[in-house]
Amino acid sequence: MMKMLVRSAVMIAAVAGSAAAQPMTMPGMAGGSSAADQEFAAGMTKMNNGMAGAPMTGNTDQDFVAMMIPHHQGAVDMAKTELKYGKDPELLALSREIIAAQDKEIAQMKRWQALHKPKS
Image 1 (cartoon, rainbow, N blue to C red):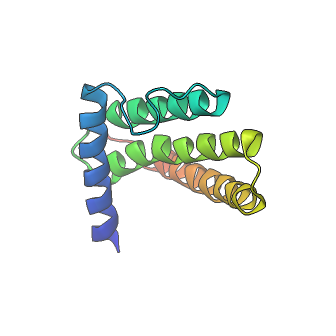
Image 2 (cartoon, rainbow, N blue to C red; image 1 turned 90 degrees about the horizontal axis):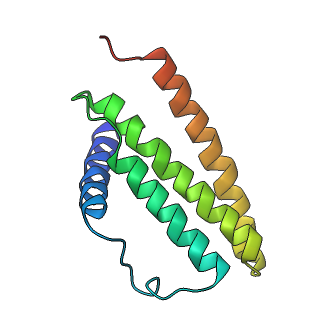
């Protein structure tokens, strides 16, 4: 399980690094003019910048958490946008579940970081 999480983190880092080096262009988002489209785009930019800007320490555990916190926060931000503008009851319920789950995991990762500060 841990190996799978580490591989996922490495893949996320690679994607985030390439995303940070290129302008944000995703199908359907280039000309999005609704308030929701703008919030989604801003949230994704914030998430990608946070992930790409996470310090790489060479400690897989530290690096994983440093990248996953902004990733999870991006999910929370997108779910809040869905709650604000969305209409589908199933997706609104899913958004509330995502917020609850991701907030809990963000708190867990921040607690882990506080207990495992890198040695200077």
